[in-house]
Length: 222
Image (tube, rainbow, N blue to C red; front, side):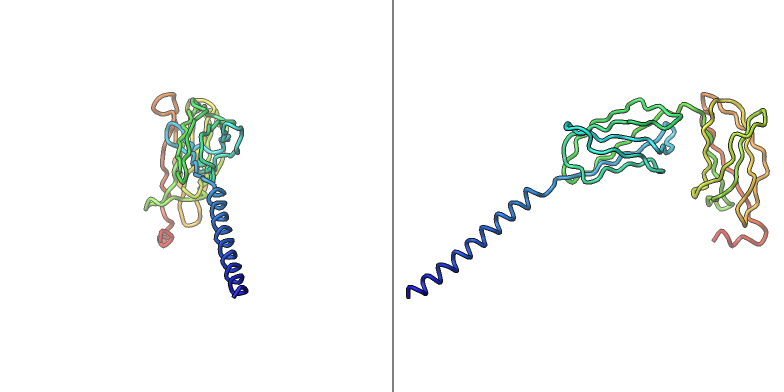
């Protein structure tokens, strides 16, 4: 009988030890769980155009947490950031821009995503050209050339996947633009465009060039 009692006591002690171990482990896991959130920073200019390559520090009261640079879409994402108070500080501004408010304070809560927009002031005139087909679809790799009134070539470049070609001028004034090449299946626009950029309404010059389909190539639009 005594052996049976001792055996039952041993089993009970094992069960109690197991429960205690589970409780301690659960408490450890709860305390060890990081309370985190996400910070998303969007960079654009006063005309809502994307600004890339700006660099920012994310700082806490204890110092620097991390640094990051805006991607081609003007986005920086700080992920898995511990909850708390932070300051986002601009450390590098892209050429041709000013940033009126280089620091932003935020309070990050658990599981939350804080979205912030930083608005740069562009200080040089800019061309934003869109090249598209007859159906309004963007055309990539259209070759564009820019030159000034002295016929000095300022830039030769290509449209991106969104059909966009952009250029920041050094000063306001009168410039000329012409399409040199169109991708296969399209006819380039031979028009010589005159651009007048001043410090008022035409500080940003928006225009669109339409490339028609080559005869028998309409199926390219599908």
